[in-house]
Amino acid sequence: MPESSQAAAQLVLALAIIAGAIVAVFRRIDVRLAIGGAGLLLGIVSGSPAAVVRAFMASFVDPKTVIPICFAMGFAFVLKETRCDQHLVQLLVVPLRRARLLVVPGTVLVGFLVNIPIVSQTGTAASVGPVLIPLLFAMRVAPVAAGAALLIGCSIGGELMNPGGTQYGAITKGILAATGSEVSQVECVEATQGLNLTQLMVATLVLTGGWLWSEQRAGKARPTAALDPIADEEPFRINYAKALVPVLPLVLLFLVSPPTGIFELPAEWLVGQGEDAGLFSSRLVGAAMLVGFVVATAISLLFDRGSVVSPATRAFFDGLGFGFREIISIIAVAACFSEGVLQVGIGKLIQHGVTLMPQLLLPVAGYLTMAFAVLCGSGIAATKGLFDVFAASALQHGFDPLEVGAVMAICADAGRTMSPVAAVTLMCARLTGTEPLELVKRVAPPLVAGVSAAILVAIVRS
Image (cartoon, rainbow, N blue to C red; front, side):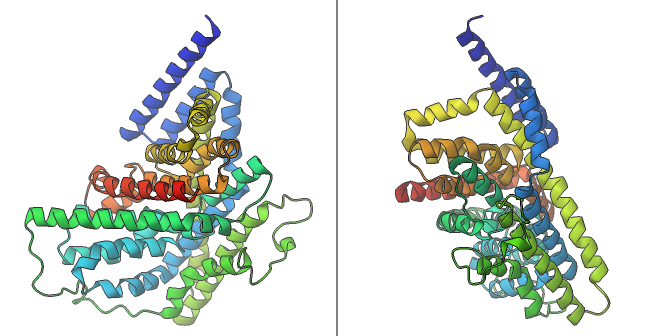
């Protein structure tokens, strides 16, 4: 068979495998089995299964993703155990209780703000949902609208405002490999925040407009009086010290990282002689989460009766395990899948397409990453799997790889939020008694509008 015909047949078979993976995911087959199996098959088709296996193994022990993700999840579990997260949520919810028109956009904003220190989307929904959903129901917001607001708020990208955001490890590592220069995770936040806030504003406006239109169409009357959904319950007494604990690691990271760098942390505290200096940033995130764990435990000891040290310690390590099981495992199979895609030649096809029309680099990087995140239900897995391809194209055509990474991170979060297999989607559906696909249909238009606006802003400023 001629070489060109063999390559064409290989590409057709690869596309069939990818289509099979998509069908498997939407048939509720475990995403790790569907994506990981497809990656291995792509490796076999390309004749390079060993490369796929290496990518799978390397992702499980990559300290630049394992440390920040697992330690952040550990801290999130500690906040739940000590109820510090609830004090922050209650503090943010206070203004919404008597303003019905604000409950949907307010739910999005509260979820976004809580997701900044609690970088787990599922953890954020679990913290915010039990407070906000009764409030939304009491104000006669339909379950699907309530679930959509909760889902967008908790998953649209609040964690991207945190230097410990799970995607930044993959972006900084990719930039270091592509350019030889290191960027900090705080610099990633600076590159992303304008696009992130643009997406948040547009998506919230579209979601709120859709909610008001659907209510008008359904002819639902507004309550004749302001409702207090917790009027029959004992008032929640906000402890402001506990409410501030969730943001402590975030503050610490900004204080010791560029560009603020008010305090300098000696590198030898986290990186020993002979170790990779690039580990400093990821270990710094882990150290900040450890400080948060200690402070949360100390404040709970001060204000609560009984000892919380043992439960909080168990919660921290439970969170580490949860992060590895639910996030790192998906990253590993997504790396397997992405390597298979690259080995079979689809990555080169993408790069060739961008070469023909370099002005489409940002839209292609954004929308393709979003589609990958919809498929695998993980934002970090999508960014980690595709960033290297687009970073190389960015350098070739004079784009800033950090700008490309910012677009991809935002679109990855939007894709995860639209994924019926994402853990946060399943959590929001469970909290509101709705079906995941119902929520996906409701959140898709606002999210597509939001990422399109963010990509447009990125194109203009590039």
